[in-house]
Amino acid sequence: MLLIGWGLIAMPSLIKADGESRPATKKEKEFYKTVKTTMAQALPANGPTGWDEQDRPVIQELVSVGVGGVTVFAGPEGPFRIDYHVSWQDNKRKQAADEATLEALSRQYEAQQAQPDSAAMEKLYGQFDKLAKELEKAFDAGDMNQVMKLQAEMEKSRMRGGMS
Image 1 (spheres, rainbow, N blue to C red):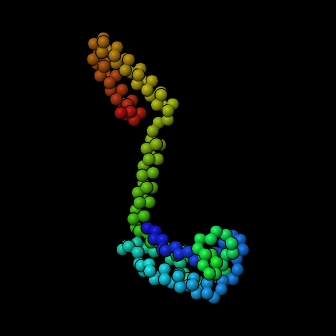
Image 2 (image 1 turned 45 degrees about the horizontal axis):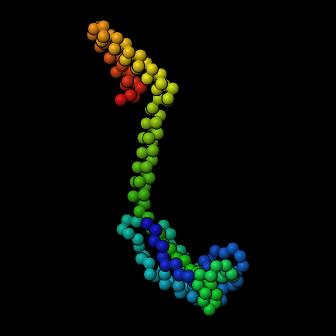
Image 3 (image 1 turned 30 degrees about the horizontal axis):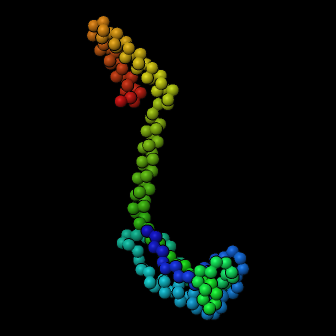
């Protein structure tokens, strides 16, 4: 679960944006720290029971402010943007789901490997068709011994080829 904290629009993050920047003023630094601290305090210290925290930012001092670009909020000092987020994840459930997915993919791969290729299937169908015609002739001729023999061969052929 990803909990995205309040994205207040105030100053750029510590990562410099593309383009020009200038050193942050004392007022901007104070505002930045106040907003980040408020957001950190507003979010729970712990996530859902059994979940592990994945990400929580460390509040650092604002060093520079981008100049120009898209203005989301224009304050007395210019455009600002502040982001803060915390994320938790149920690692046990995620690991179980990952393992189940790998197991399912493994079973699917094994099933695909067990299937004969199309040329082998064509050959098998041809043999089965030939046996079916011989069975019909033996049945029409009243040769029940041959009918039973051919039925047994067809069953063996069906089982070998994975035919249902």
